[in-house]
Length: 307
Image (cartoon, rainbow, N blue to C red; front, side):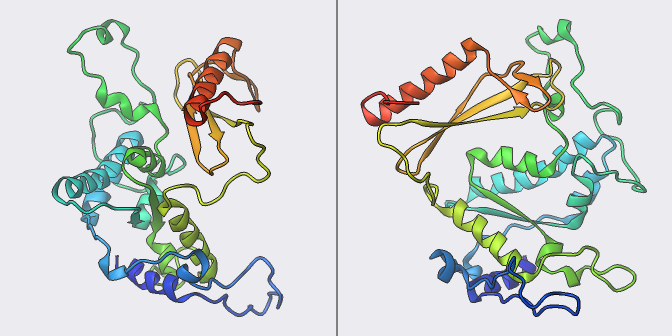
């Protein structure tokens, strides 16, 4: 948190692009000074007034060493989730955006591609090699048969995805690595930063843009040239990791002239028809469009002229 407090002041004051190095051009058009949070986006905050929650790093270290990576990632995420839930139970203060300042070990050990080579791993609740739910159709019909421990296999082992999904019903989140906030505080044996980070101005733009978007009650931008009475729909498909039937999730977003967007969750199904092709069945498409039209009518007291 000390790292973020120092960065907070830089966000408020503004950050200049560093001078070009000996091998860089004088005019670097992809870089721009960050002028400050209030000057750029018209928002501000008091770094000393932020709620601060701390987690014992040894807890995180131990959880990342659990033998099964799905279980390890879930355990690490649960440490953060439990701490936030305790705060919400005991405090009345409402948080607009939750910022997670995570140690580098979370990034190195809690992603799908993490190898965790050389770590002393510890036994968990499931075997090391298990990557999908165990098929037990006879037992699953029993009322007292608990399969919740296998919920960890419904998605890839990714700390970021786990946190984002959990906080959808709580508040927006922004996850920052400690090495992003101060690369020179984390050096290797040769005295160089353990990772190469972007320049301070670019990092400032990235953090500030996220804070601006996530702290607004409505999206701060909208579609241009929207025609009156026309309902605009964007479609997105997501492959479901470890799904037994290789199904895909479909979702649609209805864009409104006011800038709002209503998201509809479509049915899961075999919508992937080619390597980069996705298509709903006629019945699923009709059901989704009915939802969109009904919602449009509820919001505008009339059906759309055009989809």
